[in-house]
Image 1: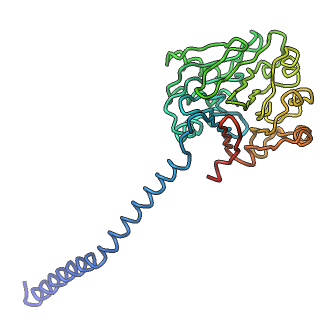
Image 2 (image 1 turned 30 degrees about the horizontal axis):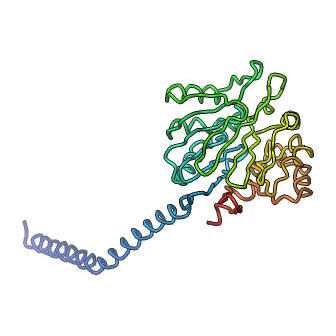
Image 3 (image 1 turned 90 degrees about the vertical axis):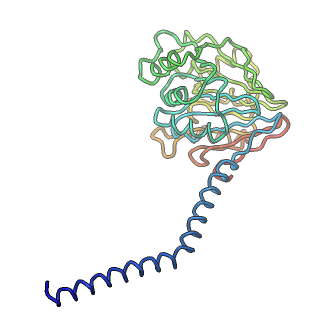
Length: 318
C-alpha cells in the first residue's frame, strides 16, 4: 500500500471519528428537547384518557340516565342507574361494536338484560356484538306469530349467541316489571297473532323514575298503537322515544295525545332513504309542544332525571 493510500485511510478514519463525535454532540444538544417532547406527548395522552373517562360521570344515586345512541338508521338506548343497566335494541349489525364501545364508555361492564323490541335488523343486528363482548343477564324478545318469525342472519345469530353464552331468552308477560334500582321498567304488550307487520309486535317499555316516565315504542305503527290504546294501558310519559324513527305511519294523533310527552326523541340516520322523520310527524310533535331531539342532527342524546326534573344534553357537548 502506498504512502498516498495510507494518508487517505488516515483521513477517512479521522473523518469517521469526527462524524461520530459530531452526531453524539448533536444528540446531547437535542436530548433535553427530546425529553420535553416525550413528557408533553405522554401528558397529552394521559389527559385524553382522563378526559374520555371523566366526560361521562357515574350516575348519581337515585337518578336515571338514558343514552339514546346515534346508531344511524336504527335504534339503541342504554338505561343506567347507579346499580343497574339495561339495553333496549342495538342498531344494525355494523353498529354493534360502536354500541359496545358506548356501553363501556358509560362505565358499564355488565348488563342486567338486553331487550329487543322486535327482530328487524336495525334493532337486533348490533345486539350480537353486545352478547359476544359483554356479560348479559337475560335477553327479552316479543311474542311473534309463526308467519312473521324472521329467517334472516341477524335474528338467528343473536339466538345462537344467547344459547352459546347460556343467556336466558324470555318473552315478558304484559305488566311484567324489571327492577332498575332507583327506577323500574314495565312491559306492555297485546295479542300479536292478528298483526301482519312485525313492527306492530314491538314490545312497549315504560320506564319510571320517581315522578317521571319514559316510553319506548320500538317500531309500533298506528295499528299497534291503537291496540295498546284499546287495551287501556297508562301510556303517559314525559319523554317519548318516537316510534319507527319518526315514520308517518306511527305517532298517531290519538297515541300522541295519550302519551302527552314534554320531550320527543327520534332515532334515525342522516339523509336516510326513508325520509325519516316525516314532516307529518314533526308537525304533530310541534303542535303537541314537544321539545324534539334527533340523533341524525344531535348525535347521541343523554337524558337524566332525579325523579323530579329532567335534563337533556348532547354527548357531543360534554
